[in-house]
Image 1 (tube, rainbow, N blue to C red):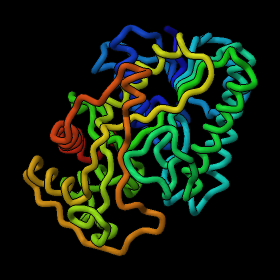
Image 2 (image 1 turned 180 degrees about the horizontal axis):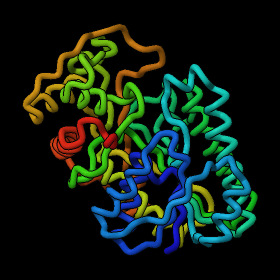
Image 3 (image 1 turned 120 degrees about the vertical axis):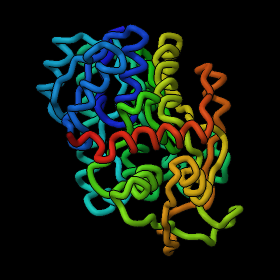
Image 4 (image 1 turned 180 degrees about the vertical axis):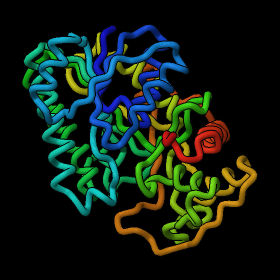
Length: 337
């Protein structure tokens, strides 16, 4: 299949491209490289033996997208592109709404103009807000607590409306929980441009010596050890979920939201202890006050993914942490050469 992958040099996008190329798909990546490195492309080639086609472009650039669709003629799109830091979204909300929402609308309009109506969208479990009780399932009410989460929710709602207006569209909104890990080769992984926003890259950068200490936001939640509990999923399992979603589009009409998670919760201190054991390095941490909007426990009900996609997570927490450490220890400065 000829596929267009927006944001395909990013963390989840690059792992998905590896799996797609390994299955023989023809892949074109569109990325503006704001949150990623072009060096990812040569790493993908090392893993798969194939260099993906790449166009440096912004999804807000309608002319560039029209040229890409005319030139490459994709049959389906996997849409990862977008800004993704919760904290930053509070500081620069207009940038998030412009890049994520406006850029997505431009992409969808160009898709429609070229009669490409098969789409897998990279959504997020943040759309469940803070009032639902885990395990979270797709029938629950949605809401958002920050501009980043609102952009994901807005895009989902746009896609539901789009599918209602035109039955030719086949769309799956994949609601991710907490992706961690890296490709087993150690060649690609998560490489934040600045101070990491997510737990695992922060822990691994403390372990490698790039950061001095981890901040743990709150130890007084109603959880086994008082720290927040999340559903961590291996990024390769997540990538394989996109493969299954693409395969399912052929038999799907309309728009469907589907969770991708393990259905299990792990606390912050369990992650820290596990990573310290696997890396052989003590990860110093400091307990600091809770962050506004943080929830004690978040994990998925992943039954719909199994029923509709024939997918379930296979890799356990130990594998997730081992692969994270392999990536970080062999690439202490990330993709910087």
